[in-house]
View 1 (cartoon, rainbow, N blue to C red):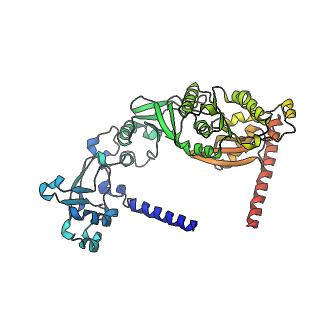
View 2: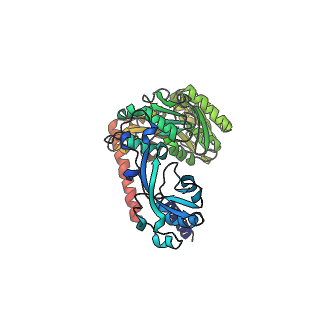
View 3: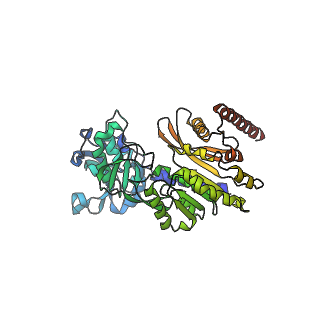
Length: 474
């Protein structure tokens, strides 16, 4: 019964999507494209987008319009700032004030016979109600992406996407598009609701503070923003911290893993996309970032969400944070009796260099600390380290990168290698999740490449055997 209800709900949702979907694509119709003369325009000239076209229309009495419109829903012309149903009084004077004019899509309707004539005639709408008339299109009638397709060179890849952070639109323009940057900025300022600033990434991310140089293309030089991610409001100066809205899904994935009373050690916390939601869920959080500006906004966002009681913040190098703050807190928790009642997570979201900090965990405990904990069952943390990987098989490569930097192979303690996003051709971002083990925490010597490869091969074979066993069992 539950399955039937879910199936019915899914069917209704699909039908609703189909009803609201615009069936005809405007950019497939030469008549509805911006004028050819705008191709290659470097400085925005809005007047150049004016265009006269002849458009099919249907004249219907106002009293019948609500009955006729459902019959024509998929045939309407839908463009920006253009009403497909208009009182004729606005166009032809008061004589026609009781009539409505319906604008029809020129790809869908070529003649009266293209309409549902039998149904229309039941409402006394006949061929005499169908006609063509002139319509002027202008810059306001096209979306930003339609403007860009008409202006930018056909032979090169156009502007495929941009990021929105509060009132800022952030671009990463390729070299061949840079001559058009002023036009692009002005169009986005016009077309993106609430946009007041358009910037372009001018250099790669700085290795020290994870922020990048940006160029103001258009609008206000105002970089302090407010943005909502996964229901939480964040505030920061976008020009001085690192923030990527494309990681919002990954932030949510980690947050959903956490339960009240869990522990999160956030090594590269930024302005708090992991730490603040975790503290809001009543997790115990130690959050750190080297960038003083990120640290300031991390505290601000925690205070704003009223969760600082569950979050301690630090402003230091990640290695120092792990050794000076995480380790004492972890040792203290291990000596308590109730460590099985919660999970411990360590997030390391600095994909360009986080793996370089993994060697901290090798030999994390000295002999005296290990001896003191000898007879206890330890609640080992799960490490979530982020890294880029280049090449054909990026998933295999990212595991190799983690193992090489950890200095030890991952075996049964590997919990998963999760794809996060594609960064560039043959360059992907991953999260590698693995549990710390007694061997990792006590081993000071770095394993050789051959030892790591042998352990990895054995781990892969074990995984394949388990998969085969599961298939046979099924």
